[in-house]
Length: 202
Image (cartoon, rainbow, N blue to C red):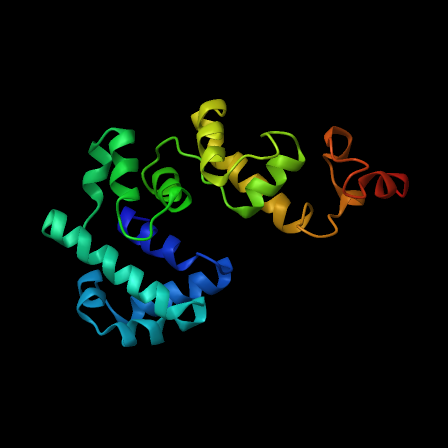
């Protein structure tokens, strides 16, 4: 996926499921053949098109603001120039766009630009703290810095996806499924999250 498509999809993915954001992205690109068309369309039309992704009014406004900034900066809607920039400048540029935070920027950098960035969402943050990979009080922004400093670039994608999958299916926020967790013997949370009781049932 090109960087601009990736950025738009990631904005749509905020505070919703992958299925919902994917559906919203498909509906958006089907109705509007170019990002220029999205930018020129009334915000209400864009919101109606992406309603399946949730927070439609907020996200439609954010998308139009981002597109407007990029066109103002670059004279067109294309982020391929980021591939030729140093990684720190790429991160700074993305973070300067309206509504783009560390996770959104890292997703674009890792999966679209192939740069060593580590996206941290709520699942990654929760699982990482429970497993003792990062300190208990670590903020989301600090977690990005820690992971990018301790994970080899070629392992970032697999580890990121693995932590998300584990957080969504096993190490869920409430009542983690410790009885079927393959990491239970390594987990420092045994006896804290109910893992010790679950362990005895294995």
